Length: 149
Image 1 (tube, rainbow, N blue to C red):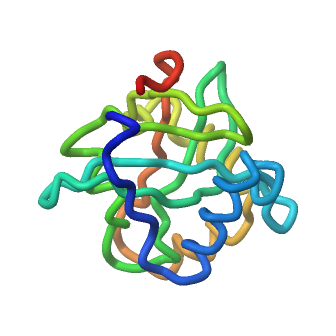
Image 2: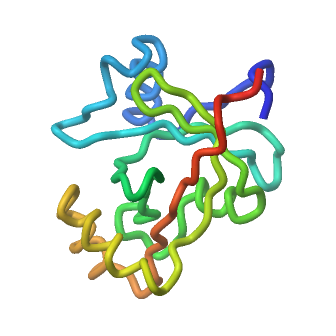
């Protein structure tokens, strides 16, 4: 990913507003959202090739970051998740820190533990799981170093 590539923020109005505030303040406004820690995830669009950025609640595990592809309990995976399946190299911003990461779906041996940890952070994930038959992805973001310009 290159900084000069245009980044398109989430088409969802309140998410785009949150992302813009987060970026403009280097995370001092937006990193904690209603008491929950949030990061910015930038993926490469699987069809368009454009960089797409969204805000997500996260947890931490052994030096990695964990996010959940709940999509509010929709029967469809969120676009960011489908994008990282096609291209797992992503950019992440946590507060003022920006870095490259590789995304992977949590493995069976860790998935249940990470799911439970994420439901402690954001209990609504439990109700989202009841709304859909799809397996809600738990994604691990493994930092790879500072973002490349």
